[in-house]
Amino acid sequence: MGRKVGYAVVGLGIGKAHADAAAACENANLVAVCDLVQAKMDKIVEKYPGTKTYTDFDELMKDKDVEVVSICLPSAMHAEYAARAMRAGKHVLVEKPVDITPEAAKLIEEVRLETGMKAGVVHQNRNNVDMLPLKKAIEMGHLGKVFMGTFAVKWYRKQSYYEGEQAWHGTWAMDGGGSLMNQAVHTVDLMQWLMGDVVSVTSHTDIYNHDIETEDTTVSILRFRSGAVATFVSTTCAYPGLSTEISIYGTGGSVEADQDVLKTWKVKEFSEEFAEELGLDACDEEEEEEEMLARYGKGNPAYQAEHPGTFVGHRSVVEDMVNAVLEDRDPQILPLEAIKPVRIVCAVYESAKTGKTIYFD
Image (cartoon, rainbow, N blue to C red; front, side):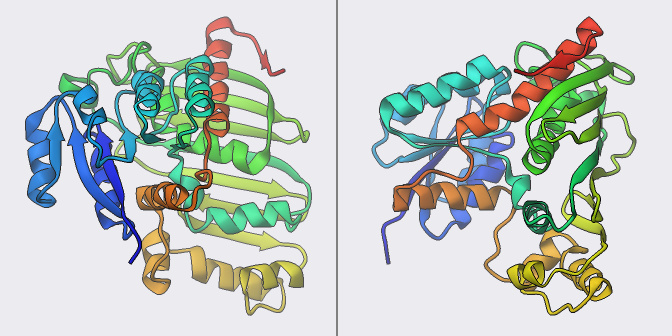
């Protein structure tokens, strides 16, 4: 058995998912957690006995058993604490968004290069089982020329989500935005990953059902370097929380999904090359559609049940980060890649504030 990487998690909101992932990872040991609230850490220790607890980040950094740290603090703290961890000799995995401005996020890249430590960013939805074949279909031209996308994150948050310990949510200073920066940034990342570089953004934002500083609804039109266009909607007002629509339309086919569940797979022409790439048994368009929906139409859990060893969600990015350390390679998503969705989100807010279309360099 090879050595195991010592893992720590800072911030036990979404950080609880990171702790679970590290504990489940065959090549990692969950060594420590760090939070200002001892009760949160006690729950982790109860679940994973022997885990050390720290309320002082600097003390955690002195722990020689820790090699990788997940940074799961409020969004505006990501760059600062990732930089501090790398300068203390720790590799870092940063929860989304990488930070709330491109300028702040660049600090992580600068310190990564300065220290030689590894830095990865969490955008786990790229690993949803239905997104991987969609990405491959676009890259192989199986959908023809992509000309349009529609994306809609229709979620719901109670007012209590923005209160108490979570009062940093929905603030410009710590959250960097509302429904778009916090909830929908994963889908913004998927949009630019699938459709390419954005060249312009025109947006409207507003607050409809919350007492917060930032928006709870956005509507945007985006143009891409390829010439394609897309609409993007985000909200935390869609009671009781509905869907995450991800749709790509090309001259040769259309694909529609609800997050990890494939809904529509229509192609004009069957491709033996694509079928071989995905290991399909199909021999024509109808068989391809049937097989794709059977494989990816029930979401991540069903696919994992049929394909043991497939990792999705936070487990996929923690596994990748641990293996990047063991194999001395870059993690899946580097800081400069993770800056792209933040740049788009910030452009949405600037467009809504100024009433102008924002153009990218």
